[in-house]
Image (cartoon, rainbow, N blue to C red; front, side, top):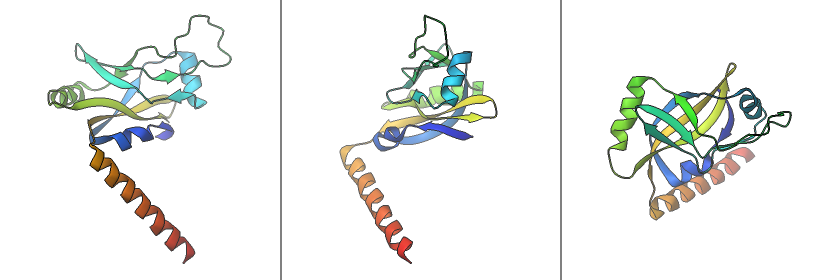
Length: 147
């Protein structure tokens, strides 16, 4: 899958428990806009209703050559998941403090795919640990670059 956009803030704010890849039902101008990289995953989430998954609050900007007048960039989009995967996600959501958010979006052939994750929020001390690990990794990269 060729990544178009990654939700970096999600990896910092949440602990990823499980990941799934899903297809998205899009219109023509939306897929063209995604191919151009005009998508923002921040603040997005997935809701499950009647054993169907829907992507909410994800901004896919208007395609610049689209002539339609009634375009909603925050439209609710249906996700295509297998029934077994949906039931696994529903079972995860029964535990407290767990939610489902988009982690990355990309292209697989001519289709747009979204990587969603079942996540649990991190505490403040966990975020500090992530910052420390990131700084140590940067220092190691700098040292090994010189040799």
